[in-house]
View 1: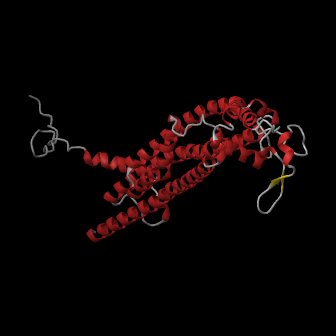
View 2 (view 1 turned 180 degrees about the horizontal axis):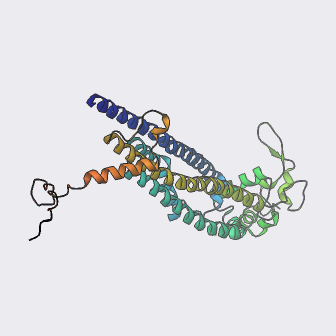
Length: 341
């Protein structure tokens, strides 16, 4: 009998350990998958953001300060989601630590809330940039072109690559500081537009203007580019915003929202099942190791375990007679005197 109980105890404990291992692997796989998808999305977002920021056209938007408080939060959030958050989740899954898993879930919730706030802030900022873009470009072209060499090189590159001239057209140079300076220094010239507005002849070495007198006209479509550069700049800004918005909010934020709902349920269920299985390993005989279905404790098994533990933890009842010995059974009822007095 003793040998049978010992074998049953060892078998039940082994089954509980096996069930714990299966559940641990299942929930770890969930957390690893969520972390991997989130990490890949964050790396893609950072790569695209770096590519956009490094574009020369970003210099046309001086109002976009990379040290803005909202962007400082974005740097911190990307750093957390680029490795720190995943490390907390993986360590919590490996150790089956409920506290670390709850910290992991809470951090993801805070990051999702921060994403929403950041999105609202930059939604208003984008509308402001788009609404004032044309006026800012006109002001900078009139005041800085020909005065600031860096801005002049930037604008010339934009006109050469996009095939445009001015903000709305070549007429924008008529009131610029550049034209005033050209007429003061070279009064004999009749230059109206910079050479970067001229249509170029394809060349293997360096493209050349189709006609060297192209700078003397601001209306001949055969020699100069008539469209303004505003549409090209605005189109690039809209495209960059669409990329960051889709990847940052439609992908990363949506993934975090889904992971929050799934992982909250999974973490809670995992902790409950691991606790039940550990209790079963400490209380042999509650599991039937005869089939795979016994590896997953059901509600009836958990209730049975709780009832057994509550019954074993209750203190023993005191004897009715108040002594250490149990009360003796009462003797037979007293016989009534049948004889008359």
